[in-house]
Length: 213
Ligand SMILES: O=C(O)CCC(=O)C(=O)O
Ligand SMILES: [Mn+2]
Picture 1 (spheres, rainbow, N blue to C red):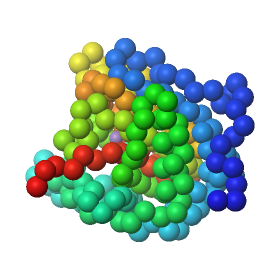
Picture 2 (picture 1 turned 90 degrees about the vertical axis):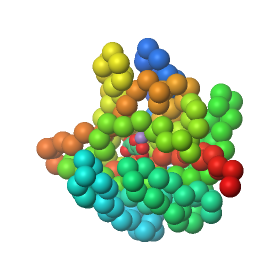
Picture 3 (picture 1 turned 180 degrees about the vertical axis):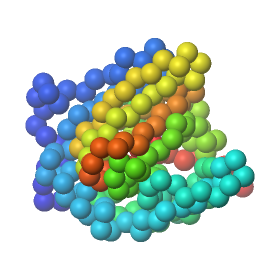
Picture 4 (picture 1 turned 120 degrees about the vertical axis):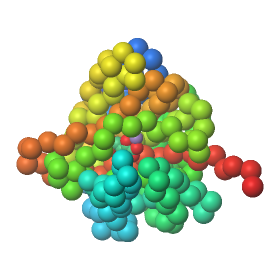
């Protein structure tokens, strides 16, 4: 790695907790330097084996509105929406970013990640519908680190019962850490937009728990 991963800290870069009534979400703007973020965006776009998967929704087969690539340790097979993904191997860029997220999680959450879902939103028509990251493999109260590279997009939390909403624009080089009971109480998603916008890559680092065989 020939560049600094972290910006030198200043007031604009200070992390803050989102004002959610439940759960625990911390936003780190500019967690990665501009140069590192630009480089990672280009590398990941070129290197990852991106695919547009099909899921079953209300009995129908539909293409998901984005490209994705699942990576992780050998044993990290992941299933969501009836889609089972075997892990692609780690790349050097993914390992560098993983290390950075583990440092950010350091003092408070002490998490080591063993897998990552990469999503490539090619334009404003690509999106992710409301969901929680609450698959059984993630365990109770998972810590998930979400890295944004490229176009900034609004990320919306919606409380499952009160319907309270909170929007955080996720900027280039930012990391959002979701922890505690966040997934139990909220769904989250990225809406489509008619605005002509550029591409965005999002990486969600996770720790999958291996079931006893
Ligand atoms: O693109 C994002 O910011 C959200 C991604 C996400 O929620 C997921 O991968 O589960
Ligand atoms: Mn999610």
